[in-house]
Amino acid sequence: MISSPVNGLQTTPAQAPISEWACPTVYFDGACPVCSREIAMYQRQPGADQVRWVDVARCSADELGADLNREAALARLHMRRADGQLVSGAEAFTTLWQALPRWAWLGRLLSFRPVLWMLEAAYRAFLWVRQTWRPAAIPLQPQGTTAVALPKPIVADLRTDHAGETGAVCIYQGVLHFARDPALRDFATRHMATEQSHLKSVEAWLAPADRSRLLPLWRLSGWLTGALPALFGPRAVYATIEAVETFVDQHYEEQVQRLNAMGSTAQTQPQIKNLRATLIECQGDEVAHRDEAARGRGQHAPTGLLRAWCWLVGFGSRAAVRVCRYV
Image 1 (cartoon, rainbow, N blue to C red):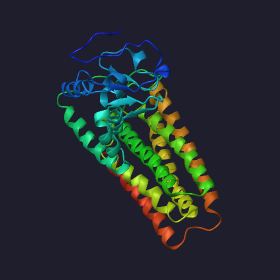
Image 2: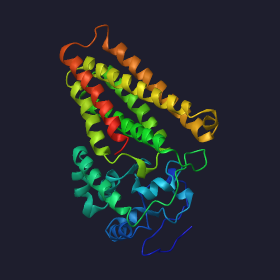
Image 3: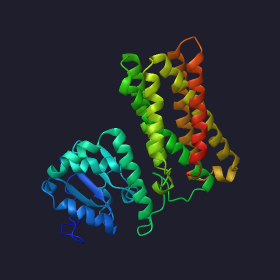
Image 4: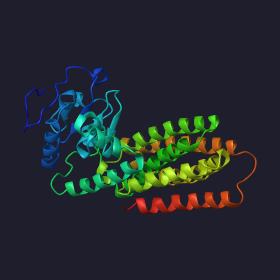
């Protein structure tokens, strides 16, 4: 454990489990020269002594916690709020700024979600440039397996899954922003929790550098896909979710079949078997979501504008997948 300054930055001794920490914690990449200078500037601000600063390039695994691995922590800024919730990217910056009295006004101003999405897009652009002087050095290592370099077609599939699950979480956020029907809000809350679980599962397989560079766009698209039908009532939302999940079921099924087609030798590899199991589990949840949405929609099939909207949702989902395979 390190208790003295490293390159002018203070690292935090792991004297207590993370669950016992009562103050916010910043996880930064001390090996990145630009990141180090910025963090050093924050550490000089009033209130910085109330924040824990962990250099993930040098700290022990125990200091990261069970829900954060070193590869992810090196890829982008993370911050653990005082309540234990872990956030990253632009949201981590706004959370950090709100913890510093002189910066609190800026953090509150930029935490408004549409503004936060634009800030995230700018941050991702910086991360892309950062690769020129701080390339990722740690291989992908899904939890419970050894490090593995997955074939490019599988990485492309996982990129679409990550973007899709990101968008799915935002769909339910959009629904909850406008929906007032108790049954619909319960439906959206439960399913959003499942999609968040799916997102974490996919993130365990996909290196940050391999994720879609258009995630802010997929977040916005997802939020609108949930918010717009919520303005027209539960039936429109249920029909929308049914259309989305019908496509997602097919999308996961195609991926499972591609893994099956790799042959018996590939299927016996622990990584491929575990990935296949993950995809099948996600697919099963999405089918359950589709069927519950169909029951919520009722006996009547969508007609008129609602049918056109559902067609547009399916078309947009297919188009997004094609784009995500490459970007």
